[in-house]
Image 1: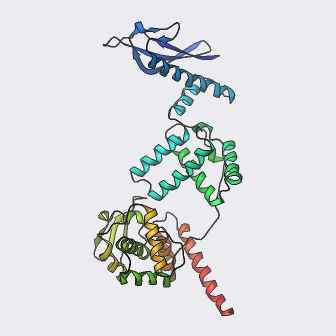
Image 2 (image 1 turned 90 degrees about the horizontal axis):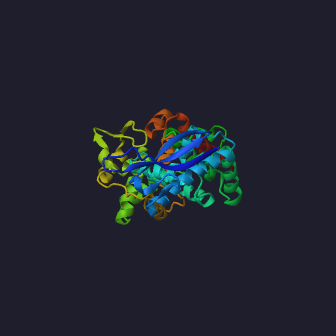
Image 3 (image 1 turned 90 degrees about the vertical axis):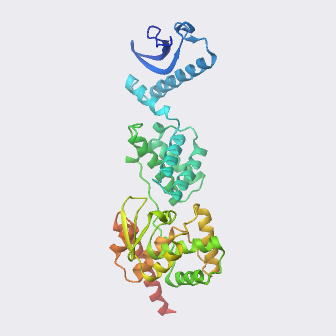
Amino acid sequence: MAYIKLYCKKNRLRPNGTAPIYLALRIASKEKLLSSGHYINPDLFDNKSEKVKHKKLQLTLNEMKAELEDVILDLEREKKPVTFDTVIARHKINAHGNFIKYAREKFQKAYDQEAIGYKTWEQHRDCLKVLEAYRPDVKLHEITVDWLQDYEYYLKNVKNRAKNTRFHDFKTIRRVMNLAREDGLIKEYPFRKFKFSQEETNPDFLLVHELNALVKLYYQEKLNGPVQRTLGNFLFSCMTGVSGREMRDKESIRFEGDQIIFTRKKTGAQVYIPLHRKAKDLWADVKDRNLKQKYVRVNKDIAEALQEAGINKKVTYHESRHTFGVIGLIKGMNLAVISKILGHKSIKTTEIYARIVDDLTRQEMMKWDD
């Protein structure tokens, strides 16, 4: 039998005459005092009735007591042992609020500290919105294998989310659970048994003649100022593999001799990229023109430039790196060099560009049948 009682330790007075209020957790005739963080004049608290002559404080204490009682009920319902350790551990988890609140705080902090980029933050935000519509009050400890399987059914059959979209949903949840595990908020990690995957798709990119058409458009200077500035940054990324994240903060990029040097924000690794003539010419134009902050606006600019150049493709700024990888291989660059410039942790990530080039070669050879 376990229960909670409000208790004021009246013999432990502070210099100002107030005494601490505790939540007395009693299990099998043993008791443990948990601090409520509140103090009061001992004459205003009745330990027998658990009443305090302060309406607002009484409500707060009642809520704290109810939270602990809910923890005990949850443990009993889950047929888990009700001990001081299990009750306190579960209460610690619940004290951080629900899963969604914890996740949003963590992702916002990571974004503010530039540990994740805007695109990643935006993707996590959208995944959490879908989860919030499903279960706004879900707690960290409720994310079990069974819960994940139920959520997958909901995403697939109710929301009709594609496999790759569901992949990002569960990737977001897994990231939160890893953070919770690092913070010591969970002991059971459901992703040891729950597996998810994505369909292998080829990334979008520009071909050599399409990139050349954009370069020609850029030097014609027919576009309005903001679109022209975005296109210049985009072309530089296409020719060097430098990400939009770095192009937003060019003060961190040094130009020495024939190369640029910077620390990659995502990995912290220092990168050296020699610049060919075309890239040098572009750098002179864009070095003092930082990329605009919002990806939505940037991608609208790129779409406008593509339309003006007569290119019927939906390509975002991120595809500049894919373009660099594909065209680099077409021009004969070594796969390992491309992998290093792009900052891939494994060359297997870069090998997708080799498969794309193989597919392009196959398509071109089939033209002999026309």
